[in-house]
Amino acid sequence: MVITNGTQTVVDKTPIAPIVITPNDPNASVTVNPAALPNGITYDPATKTISGTPNVTDWSSNEETRTFVIPVTVNNPDGSTSTKNVVITVCRDTDRDGIPDITDTDDDNDGYPDDVEKAMGSDPKNPYSIPITIPVTPPIIGYIPPTVVAPTPVLPTPVVPTPVPDITETDTAVDEDPNDKYVPNDLNSIDHIAYVRGYSDGTVKPNNNVTRAETVTMLYRLLTDTRRAAINTTINSFNYVPADVWYNESVSTMARGGYITGYEDGSFGGSRNITRAEFVTVLVRFVGVEKAECSFSDVSKDNWAYDYIATATAAGWISGYEDNTFRPDQFITARKR
Figure 1 (cartoon, rainbow, N blue to C red):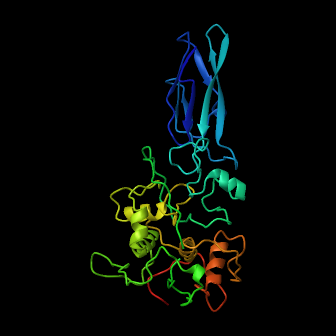
Figure 2 (cartoon, helix red, strand yellow):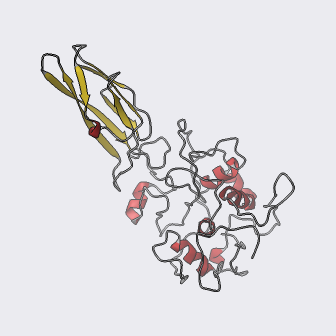
């Protein structure tokens, strides 16, 4: 038999080249073990072709490539058989930037090199796992259905942010005289900046929930002119933040500065309402996570945002509600209640 493209290496979630099996005897039948195929890959007996897009969903913590050996058996009319193997190697791409983890120096695109994260004990494949002894720069934000995109252009080099703003967060108390270490150098706290501009119909809609894109855009407008000029870009690695979307520049720039990151699926989720935990997390990333504690009854130590909420509490930015809750998953509005 002849197998075309029988050995190939592809990035996860990228289509393979069709693998065509041609028996020496046109009357022979071909059997392919479906259990050996990667998830997303199928065999069509009518055309004797293996094709599709691999989608590995069970990567182990440190796994970067996986090789699938697929037996292909030809059953000849005379009763004889012959077997050859098709070999498909799938390369993991954690941050969906088109660069396989095996050659990517920053697998989760959080601004920290993999070797630094491994040395400091954080997970190089999780954008929310950050070396706690280094000023924190990554962030959160988003969900939009995954989209297949063309190869991503080379992104600008991430710029490490400096220190969080004297911000009034909805539904929480704010310390008007924070400790100097919690004052963000990257935000303009002197001039009155028009960081809220309302909608095209002339309304502000103060009771509406605030989206993630709106939050990032407000903070982008509050950046100092010097900082904004240093990190300004319209290029990003999110699955779906196209060049013509209204928040492209603010999201791209804030991502380059290290203030925000996306979800594990590579999306940003600009239209999603931002939660109180997400909002606080983005703010804390301007100054870095401190070793601190908080005692809110609904924020346990295994909560993904615990360290950020604890830092914001230590900074005096938040005090929670009268029932000693913080309500991390509650959406925020522009109105102070």
